[in-house]
Amino acid sequence: MAARSEEVIDGNKKKLTMAERADKHELYEAAVQNVSEECKFISATFTKLRGRAPSSWREDFCGTASAACEWVRGGKDRTAVGVDIDADVLDWGRNNRVSRLSAEQQARLRLIEANVLNADTGKVDCVGAFNFSYWIFQTRPLMLEYFGKIREALVDDGVFFLDAFGGYEAYEEMKEKTKYDDFTYIWDQARYSPVTGEMECYIHFKFPDKSKLKKAFHYTWRLWSLPEITEMLREAGFKNPTVYWEGTDEDGEGNGVFTPDERGEADAGWIAYIVAEK
Image 1 (cartoon, rainbow, N blue to C red):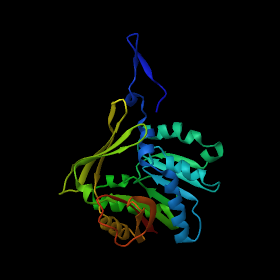
Image 2: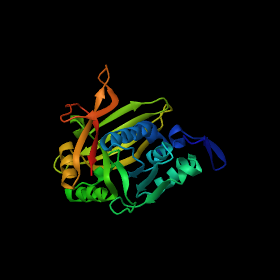
Image 3: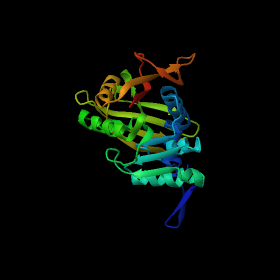
Image 4: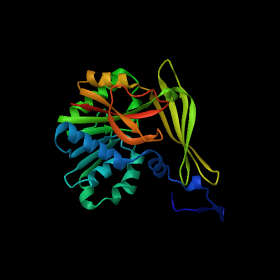
């Protein structure tokens, strides 16, 4: 949250609502991301597949670059590059995330403002496209082009990491609310087209003082299925595209442990990783 609590209008002080004081990027990371576990999964999975620890990491659609920052904090031999087309969010990341790194860590991190389809980042051990952001490519030719570019950007034993969501609720036009201590996160599946597969989604935030931050984030994606994604990865030249399914705890809730699974479960809503080898 921003520290500002009031503003002056025509000489009068007005107390700002929680929504007016909120920083949408801080809220997003608190509600959606867990970059520490994400980086652990990448490192452990790559090491198991390749018999060596990864050092270089490219975060596509990096946004605030929190994952890239977490990556370089993980070891002095680690380098990271974040790619995003949005200059404003990259600036936010530089000011609020990269600035927290030591000078030595900052030297091992690059942020590039570019389209992921033509970003020149050099070859890296692993690339990640998370939070379903690559679903912005709504046609097979575009997705195949993207996958092909990523394969070219990987070293010979490189690995590509993605995520996906689905389940029968994924096709519904609905809202899902999750309460946190200081706010409520609202995932809004506003529109879905069965003919094209296109969906339009928003993220809203609601606060204890009843104020709201509506449409803080907006996405227009194609709801791709796991078979479609793995088939396109193979077509782009990747080997062994594997789905990692999340396990459950004793209450049937996700436990954050992802393991290879050839079938999955017909859940109402699920999130999975996809791992593809060059």
